[in-house]
Amino acid sequence: MSVDPDLRLFHPDRPGIRKVLGNLEAEIMEYIWARPPGPGTTVREVFEALYERRRIAYTTVMNTMGRLAKKKLLRVEKSDQAYVYYANFTEAEFVSRFVQRILEDLLVSFTGATVAGFETLQYPEGKERVRKLLEEITRRRTSEQGELCI
Image 1 (cartoon, rainbow, N blue to C red):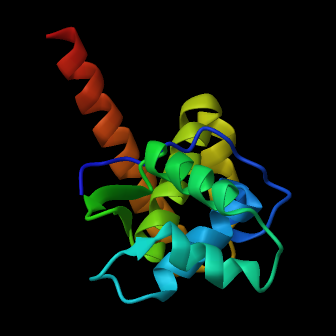
Image 2 (image 1 turned 180 degrees about the horizontal axis):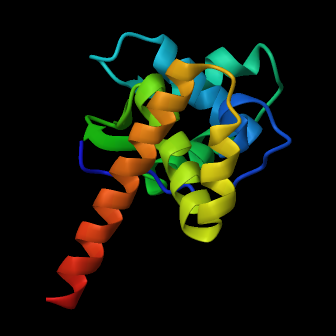
């Protein structure tokens, strides 16, 4: 999928996907990812599922799902009188994209320190995967910069 999620914020002190999403955004995405992907999800369905755990207003869920659509994590389609939301990414795809984005930002901003930091990894297979990812990021950025000069 060519759509890239909007991941401008990063909170290193938060767990999991909450590093790039707020708590309610993360809860909504976790709920949507846990459902079968085909039929989509309405605000009402999410509201009813979350209301048991946290007393929350319907409009808060609606606004948050709208924000997730603006961030390109969800796409929305009108169906009869309701809007149906679909995840643009599986959870694994989302995590992969946000990790790649963070690594890319580190590589661009702190190239030497980022590469040196990965050299200290204790697991050879982890080092190799990170090395390949860094090579891909460098290759892609070099290609994009070449296209800008044309």
